[in-house]
Image (tube, rainbow over all chains, first blue to last red; front, side, top):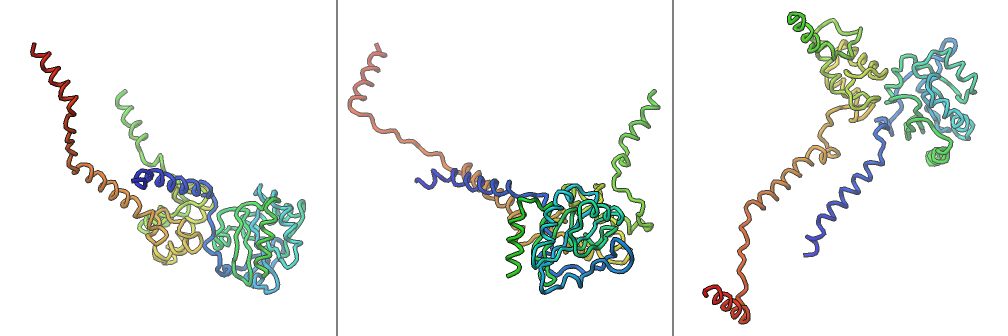
Length: 175
Length: 154
């Protein structure tokens, strides 16, 4: 019986494939449960002065793909991804907003002063409560929205080599 | 000397040594605090992954503990608090995954393997040993056998 003879090989192959796939997954990346759902309701103060820095209504823009980036001046990887954000901020049909996560506004401001400010608007999430509503586990994390709905999430810094991938995602959302 | 040793052992064995995640903003009502601890033990720290938020000192775990306590004070039920967490972080935030289609293999896999293994062992133990019926001797072998027997009888 040739089948019976090769059965252990088939079982081994099955386990091998399962492990091979499992090892390529990154357990550090926990996707937000909000993907393909509307962005949470929020209203955050600005880094400077009074009023509103960023709120849910800002995300409902039918003409633009909205990118919301959680950052902090104390976060090293945020520095690494800064050039990528500058690039995204200048991309056509895209609006980039920032949420400063658990950061002193004065620190966020000097961070942006030294590196440049790629954000159209910034909200200060002083206690990190807003980030929890988005399902954020740490900075940096970047959300891509269309018509107020979260469509894509990038966990960790956006490296220059990943820009092509990110721009492809934006293009797909624009269609 | 022995009198000194006893308190030392007691101190070393004291569970307080392992008390982590003791917050300043614990609830005043011990029953409510116990409920909070019970809920927090079920929630995974998303930064340090295989710890619950009770055991973790990560900033996010501290924030999530505060939220659990706030919601208990606000009169939310256990289910409502766990829903609050899963609606943001998915089922991953629960240390004990719920039984669903997607987790069926996880929950039933070991049982399935046990049944398959048990069946194989059962079959192996119960099988009747194969009786070997030897081939009849060929005329040449017969001749040799007779020759050997005759030699031995000498």
